[in-house]
Image (tube, rainbow, N blue to C red; front, side, top):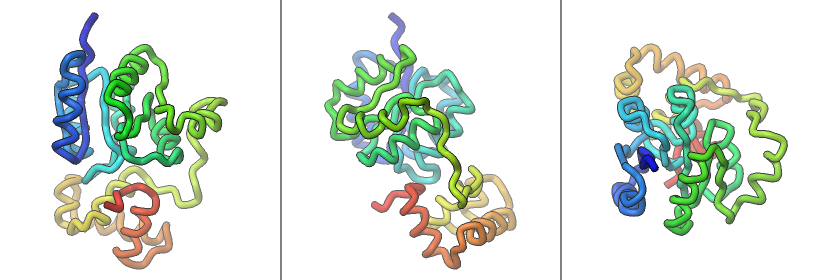
Amino acid sequence: MKRPRIVLADDHTLVLEGLYKILEDECDVVGMAEDGRTLLTMVQEHNPDVVVLDISMPQLNGLDAARQLHKLLPACKIIFLTMHADPTYAKKAFQVGASGYLLKRSAATELILAIHAVLKDQFYVTPVIAKEVLLPLCGGLERAPENKHSLTPRQREVLQLVAEGKAVKDIANILNVSSKTVEFHKTKIMRELNLHSTVELTKYAVAHGIVSSE
């Protein structure tokens, strides 16, 4: 049987090294990324069968990275491996295209099981939170209705970078746009969310899982 090609993404080097050790006997780990933007570049270079990623990552969080990844490579399976046990995060993960959701405290063998499952076009949810996640989704995995404060993907990218404390010029370089464009998006975000400072933007980003509270 062909060995699956895997790309790993986590902002902790030790986690990446540990995952590599777990998978190396059964999979070909073709790339390891420490932020969401590097991940998107890497998957386009390596065209993996499966991406295993965390939710909390710098520059582009896992949920927004998965949303873009699903559009770039629809055939690629996405598995979240995260510390977030809140079923709300799992539901969001499946809404953006994930096929699997595991917790970092899960047994190492569970990741192998999840990879085999998603490659058979099955869904996998760690048993710890499976009931809370699957019952509301039994009617299908359609997108949840957008709330009244619906930001565009670009606005979410800008918001995350602002919340991470990056200067406008640095954000412009990361997104390959002008500083004026960044300021435009920031102003639109603040108006849309009725927020009035970078501190309030940061609190909003943490509360809504766009950046980690760590």
